[in-house]
Image (cartoon, rainbow, N blue to C red; front, side):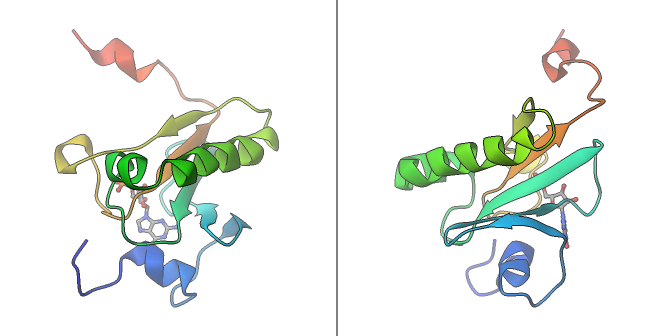
Length: 118
Ligand code: 5GP
């Protein structure tokens, strides 16, 4: 994320651009991914823009990371309770938005992604 320009997620939090919001509290927001990779694909995003990825969040505010995981579980409970939680961390790992976020993926996930490793 640039230090001067707000991320897309900050613009969603500020209601500058629309999103299908599924849950929100003072510190976190969850909304449907615009390009879903599973039947349920929800992003959970801390409202603070200060952490670019999950490692920074873990180091800087572990309580907020724990709350994010619990928040994700509560959302997943509405869809049967079992879910994959993904944090792409770094460009080569597929991260495109450098405002920390978790992907909740539920349903029709196919193989465990670890199976790709040879
Ligand atoms: P990343 O690639 O950084 O792990 O995940 C970014 C995610 O944000 C992608 O899955 C992408 O589809 C989603 N995304 C990008 N722009 C928007 C947007 O404007 N609205 C919503 N709801 N999701 C977005």
